[in-house]
Image (tube, rainbow, N blue to C red; front, side, top):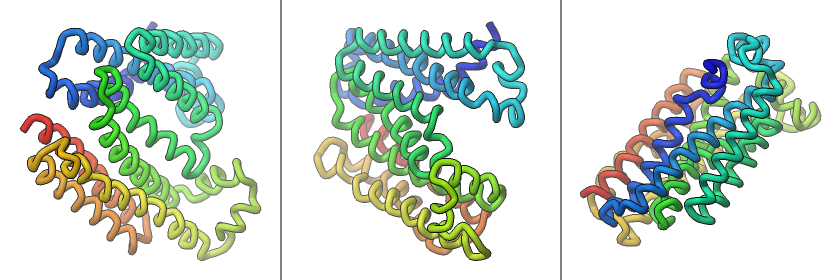
Length: 298
């Protein structure tokens, strides 16, 4: 039983369920927390927990070979749980989570199906893909807020939060990849060439002494554009009269750190720089979430 619990990575799944709750509460705070909507939100949180747990399990299923070397104490390589049993456990969790979503409404059901497919696709073929894997993770992070909004029948505010969370998280995921290049460049090269062959590595200049710099600049531009879009989108809740001045005040601090991260990216050249940028983006993401919560409450 302990092995199955560990497969879920419950801490990770609980964080996802809490994000669903935040997305729902952004709407419910204006409606007086009606009991029938609270029940739907509770079901959404449970469904999210199960689907995220299923995603974590299927990830371990596909990662068995690397985990035998890098994480031998995980449930499958340590033989706490058989590989086939882990697959069956994952499928059962996916099906239960999707079924629970169907009891809420059709929008939640659709999001649950799409997210389940994305989780499987990520574990099977996207986690080793530069950019595509980052986009998948960023979508999943943002969609938890949307799922909470869908559970209580309003997508507008959670959708805006989803866009901001997804764009800022995409930038941070890219920056974290760049941070890894400096410490483990050979591993990163393997990730790149495993999916698109060595000729693509040549195209991006991964051969030779200046290769890393050329690639870093290309990928850093994507990260910067993602953050810039987040900054442009962030005032919309205020401009559309969805949230008030309290949201805007806190948002200014969040956007300041996003802008600072963009400025730092323009002259970043090593692991320490990217590590610092990652922390700056994380702080901006936290303040952005606080801005939404304060904007709803005040």
